Length: 144
Image (cartoon, rainbow, N blue to C red; front, side, top):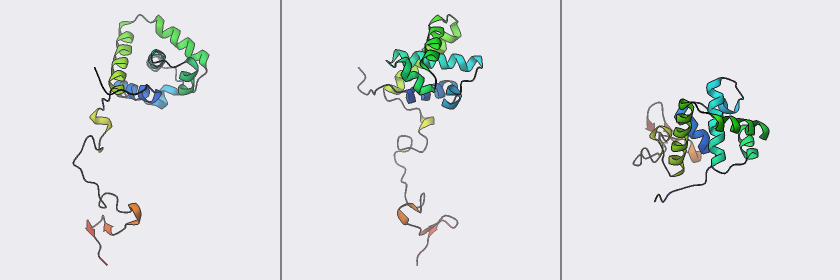
């Protein structure tokens, strides 16, 4: 039993697509007609639909009307191509991992998870809170 879980969101679905295919959210919602992009979009529609999203909610996430989503879902269900089905299965598996707390190192660069012992101080953000006594050019605190 996995203890960590969160509610599915379109953000996680877009993140999974980016991690799996290297496609941006902007590319997916752009309405581009390249076959690869259309198939990726249909797979994300299918993923969101199986996670309980309505056609209207998926349409809002993609800035498209619900009838476009319905058509895309019909096409998704009708697909028999093994490459298409493999990609759909891979996206579902990655999305499941994201829902259960998986955080690939590549997406958390510089974060606490990647560098738990890193101390961020005034050297890294010298002007935060009005402090300006660190000169990054000479790497020293200025004493007055």
